[in-house]
Image (tube, rainbow over the protein chains, first blue to last red):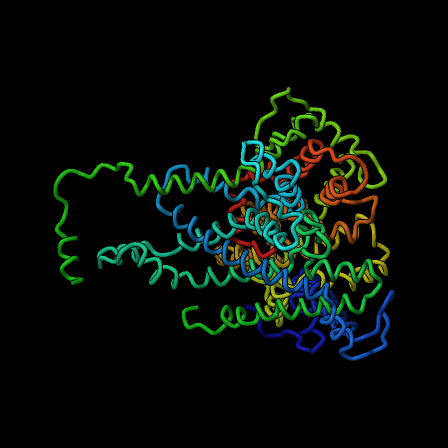
Length: 302
Length: 303
């Protein structure tokens, strides 16, 4: 190691030492400073202004936020994403874990099952949305098929039913995402030491008890990570809504991302769109900050 | 109580080795797994069957039955060549080539930059590098909508808004966090002696990267490329905002074909178009198999 005889000015420290390395990470540093910090700060700042068709620095305090939360379209959006989030998170986590446990029983054709469960995840949300739009088409889809089988009163009109349209989004979203959760949790299950299982068996603990009292607590890290990934994905839900329902019928399946998009690029009310996206940012931070504390807390074993 | 069971368990081997039979419990497992498999496969089956049917048969409303009045390839040709997306009726092929033009450079650039990032973060640390990395990862969770408008302004000022270059830049930026994480973890797992030996031999930053790190990291490059190609191909939001009408990727065109208001809906053409759009990621998924799974397990943060 050459630690002596180097020039050590401030300028040298900041730029020249490890010059190639610093050059190589310039794109990352610029991305962090300009995009992640700069653009986010820009959005938050302008959410307090009276920007309409074009951004302007005419500050009006919290007016945009007050207007936002009075807007029934926004209220609907928030309620929809909350319902979607709770059901989708619960279902994908529970079923994903159940499938992972079953897949972990040394079954045959494991890779075939895994391939089948996961392939929807490889598809675009647009593709997923359009496929389910076709299956749930009230005139020709599942409803008509079942009626043609002889059950004339059968109704499955979720796409055109204001109260059930979130259910339609859930069916498609769960179809897309469950396999992904299964894969993450299966990886977590496989990382549990075989000795733990042996010890539990020796102690005569039934399998289901072992899962609940030993394995799940041991997999806490995997669960938290999966939760964060799925959770921040839910906040971003956009493509699926555009493709499956277009926000309809009426405004009954609107979501915050779509609200933001419409106000920024459609309605010419940028300020309100920026206020809405700032609220989304806060939501994600509420999910992320506890996770960051959990993930990066000082640990003795690292 | 525990000790009692332990002693019986530890009696040691006696009697013939138990044959592995299909117990009721295992049959139940397979039944459940198969039922889920059917649920997951059903949409793909419906898509395929619909795309081979003529419209009169589709109107009968038997979505789950295979074509009974003859199979047709017509919807596929129409989806590719002449389906209407808004103003134009040139089919999906335009969007397909746009997607190729977007995906190939974005993948190459973002994988290269991220590999360099990961390498620098592991082997050439400097003051603040870990902080930048932490913000990068944290930033990847921020909803894109938060950064969308200022990015439009930035790209307009750089005169690349509504161009292919613009959307390529955006994909490169947002691909960076997860790929950097991937490469950083991989390079950290390589034996550091190699790096030190190369240093002693006088190799510098770039030489070590190209002659030692890259050749040793082909597996992780494969994973990164799979993640990026599928991710960028499936993107909708960046395409619709940044690409500009004439550069719309396939996903945007597909949505325009199906969700446009005018004309009679041709469900068979729609389903053929949907399969065509899903074909590239599906092919990658089926060919790459384990690599894809490794990729999402290692870096599914991009979603």
